[in-house]
Amino acid sequence: MAYAEKCGKNTWRVRYPADDGTLGSISGFPTKTAAQNAADEINVDKRRGTFHDPAAGRITLAEWAVPWFDALDVGPNTTVQYESLFRNHLEPRWGQTSLSSITGIGVTTWAKKKRAEGYARSTTATMVKLLAMMLSDAADENMIIANPIRPNRRGRRRHERTIERIWTTPEKALRIALHAAALGGIWAGILVLTAAWTGARWGELLGLQRHNLNLDLGTLTIHHDTGALLEIGGHFELGPPKTAESARSVSLPPFLIALLTYLLTTHTHPFVFLTPDHGHPRRSNFSRRIMRPAADGTLRHPRHRLHLPPTEPGLTVHGLRHSHKTWMIADGIPEVAQARRLGHRVPDKIQDIYSHVAPEVETRLLTNLQHRWDTALATLTQLATHETALDTPLLQLAAA
Image 1 (spheres, rainbow, N blue to C red):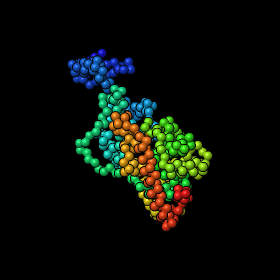
Image 2: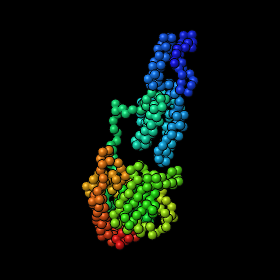
Image 3: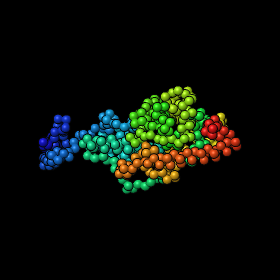
Image 4: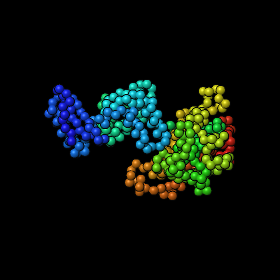
């Protein structure tokens, strides 16, 4: 039990048994009565199971980070991101601060200064999110009374409007794919088309292997354990896709079956999408050397070997996924069919459990996707005689 103890001529302290078997101490009481009242409160809290040892909160954030990261159970890429954010941002500011000394207003001020330094709002939000997770777990372990980071609308306003993701039309997606093929080879063009007409993520496309393609049935399978190729610290390794729902089978429209069939004849490697030297394309390199000039054009770079007009400036590979979603919405595809195809969970739990994709819905979805392809192909085939940037082997292959 906690009890009062004299520790100086005119001061008293409270002693209490700590969880590690030692005696904890809270000093600074001017009278025995004040110390005993505090001791009685500790005894009551201990009986109720609500006692928080003040000494536990004296551990620094850097010290808490060691066991916290050891227990962290997220994807490898997320782990690398969190470790980088902690090392470069959280530790320099908060590493030597005790957990109990971190305040919500202090964190808000720090985040504001980070934005003033030029960091994007999304980046600083992730920093604060990481710190909040660490403090929430500290509270769960009874090291601090509560997580001091709380949503607080008082005295705050939105400085930036939410920017809508850039998406594109089927015709522009095909044009970008033709540009990509001219820049990097037919494999790059087919990768862009597969991203646009399946909605697959970048890692899911890179992780696609021959045995995951059933071109006789027209399906692409994303495996629950090895469905994504992750780039971690400059190295590639197979791992699970982003979420449990991301493991799925995606049906392919006829034109894409033909293109993937051709692509598999160009090499014998187990993976489907490879660079000309049979290596895995790196996201940064693909973005810089292929996706950006394919979407943005090369007219601002007169020394570029290709003269490509802009098609959809700012579009990313992930933007092709947004495009696929937009096409399905425009075609009136039910939400559950959209979610299953993209590897999402339907927000309504009951609907998620009891809704299914009927065969006729899947047929309509593929028919619409094929129609979008046929229309885009017909349009660009007619323009190819006037635009040399469109006269590529990929267009000839697609039109065959």
